[in-house]
Amino acid sequence: MTLSRAGASQYEEVMTISTDQSLLSGLPTFEPGWIWLTGAGPGDPGLVTLHAANALAKADVIVHDALVDRRILDMARTGATIEYAGKRGGKPSPKQRDISLRLVQSARDGKRVCRLKGGDPFVFGRGGEEALALVEHGIPFRVIPGISAGIGGLAYAGIPATHRDVNQAVTFLTGHDQSGLTPSSVNWQGVASGAPVIVMYMAIKHLGAIADSLIAAGRGFDEPVAVISEATTEAQRVLETTLGEAARDVERSGLKPPALVVLGAVVKLRAALDWLGAIHGRKLAADPLGTRSPADADRLA
Image 1: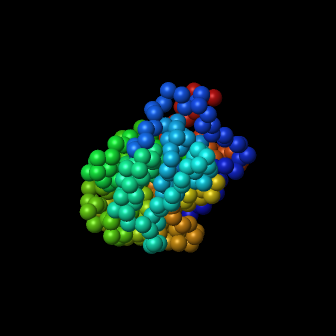
Image 2: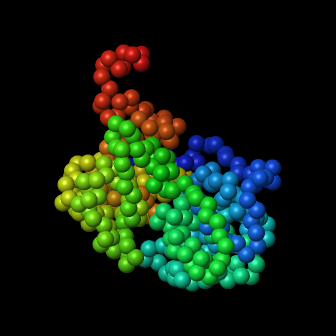
Image 3: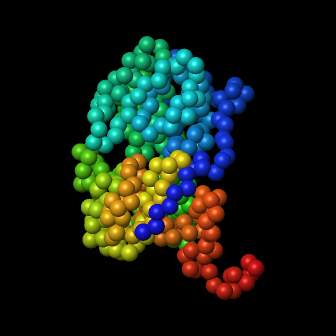
């Protein structure tokens, strides 16, 4: 087990996000009565898109999820109403229908509504459910994609989702279903055999059961796993372990949600690509996969 901490904002670089009109000129007009389903990215405010910044600068009402960084909400225009609609597993949360109806009513009141969701609204973010509710009620909307945690969070941990020496496919799955239990509809045999790399959202609560299912389906007990807690934020922590030991190591480490779990040989690349760790002085490995021949090294010398 290897646990490291190298927060995304600990290296004394200040990123200023501007929403002045010159930067946002030429972007879509946010009309009254519209709802923009907006991805806020995985946490670091610097990963907000220009379309998302435009939404925040123009919205009358911002309805946000639990995992949206306060600094992103600070990009809202003066006078905007900011409403919390977060859902966290095991904690009292507003019902999805109530959130959707709140959005509908705000739009019918002639407000410009930014529905701000962590990551990407259409990747395990219920954005599709909310968009269907808007269609049902005749509310015009725009979708603003965001950087999903399964891509951005891995990148901040120094783990590429794909690498041509490792995988030509990657599977994204959620660690729990609508009941809050381990997903019953997942074909673990198919997932285990079909994807060299598996990225799991919201999986640490049921990590033991998921690992058992994958091992029973043929994945190796010693296959590398990384668990990334609070990805892309200053509190980011990365645990490197194996599939068979992952659940125990997570419990020992004290890692808490939100967290991503990635399984596969791409985890080995962190030894070379942990750019945040390198900022803090970590020495990076030149050949983490052990595939470079002495002749290759001579050519690069």
